Image (tube, rainbow, N blue to C red; front, side):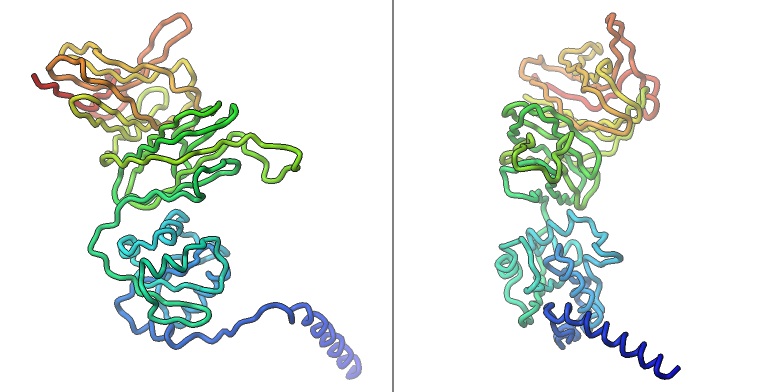
Length: 391
């Protein structure tokens, strides 16, 4: 029995030694944590630590190791292989390192893992420009205190890739908004009979067929303050891998002009046919009226369904109108849009703005879709505001 045990031991040891040779060439590093990191636990002015580059999984593991010494919360903590934190938040924080924004999210300290790879080539210089000199630095890490900012964090739109962007796979732009808002994004797009789908936080806001070069204006509803993801994707998508002799028809998005508009109120009004007004807002001066709308569809919508926006006089008759089908939508989809009216030729007076839907049959018969709830329940339209044209 004893020789058998020794035999098993020798065989097991031989296997371990044989396997060890495969790990010997692998890079190793000391697990010793600098005293400067351990000393951070005494700081009561640090709410949380932001580790960069956030997208490097090894840097994330290093961050967890350092946390065993400093005991401070992490902006991008982990419960699995990747952090559950909103990627829009992490991307914008790293891409800007804006002290006002870092203050807003509670990141009072940044730890830079210098030896971990990142495609963000300007990260090192941006840290110095935005945060100043590190309070501690060695070969592996640099620790930065985030300066207190006297300014409020303003809106940000940060593209995942430099423009012009060739869309083959889903591509994101990341948004920070200090409040609910409407964003208007104007950009030229180029494609060859390709369907481009645009979503905000996974919810459809527009679908357009791109043929040649055309202007694309997006109305993006931001329903709450915080970080959001605007996604561009093709329908159907390009294959992830394909032979070099083949080509996938992509869509190219050029530079964008971004306008941040007035706050977004919550409407949530239901109409017959499974149509919901998720949000709507009227903005006007004496020359132009803009009505921004976000529709959600609980039921399928076809080309017989017509959305209308009317500017009406005191008698209730339309003086300006925009009636058109928005296209076909599956249940659960939506559409965001802005309708503009030229007010220059309107005579002085008080005007109302109403919106709603009707079904237009092939024989021309019109059937209104009544409002189901809210102030205008039972009526055929929702009044969204008034316009005064002075003498």
